[in-house]
Image (cartoon, rainbow, N blue to C red; front, top):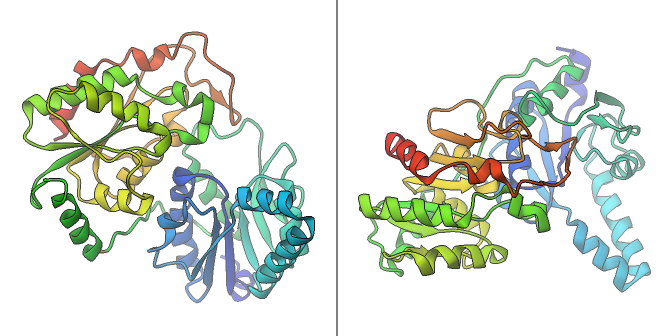
Length: 364
């Protein structure tokens, strides 16, 4: 380890503008940084949606919100106001006196901003020369492949001469919040001590219009929910965002034994707390899967276009089961792009509820 670097790394900044899973993928990096620089103060810059993932992280001094859409709205409303906002934000970064930064945005515009804001040493991944303003970088040509994203982030420690340790994802839920969550479920008629299984038939909102291609068919989610309801005494709870309400409503309306439908009714923070007290979670590839595995819960996930070796379980866990198809065309999400599907997501449709239920029984 380079002693000179150790002396200078007093204030460390991590910037990740992406989604829930991606932020969780950086938590082993955070813990490794605290190991390497125990006296340092680590600040994390993320978007508003992902902030609850980091709020209880004991290795962070501060979490700052950077919401790209809010900046765009500010520019539309007033150029003068936008410039004032920009100057204020730059002043905030300069005030942090960051001497070491991990810029995980793979965006040269952000890279230039942090350079002009006085961040001395800026590490990151260089994809298509987007890391040209980084002081230290690892070039990636074909996007993420062959290993988990978390390991790509840990590789950056090598630029500092630091050997990484393979920690699991960090996500903490205080016990008092768990107690309040159980009490809140009583309002829906669920006994405080009762088991429940979370079903997330949506997920993948970050893909927007193409999210459909990441999702196991809603008819399959209905079938597996019915199978579990018929054989297990556990309550089923449907989870999802407001944008996924039509999918959750389909499952709810067609089930004989009605589940508890919390789709669009709770915050991300509340969802995290409820997952922490669940018996198991069944979900598509996306944030709920990564949250469940970070909380060491039993979880079944479905991977279609995305490579589970890159975005799946980390590290390998007996409590996580990933279903994927062997069709030759998957994974088709490559170099950070989804080029479309001419087979109406056959890779996901081919995964049968019967096989999933068999695995669920072995898991639970």
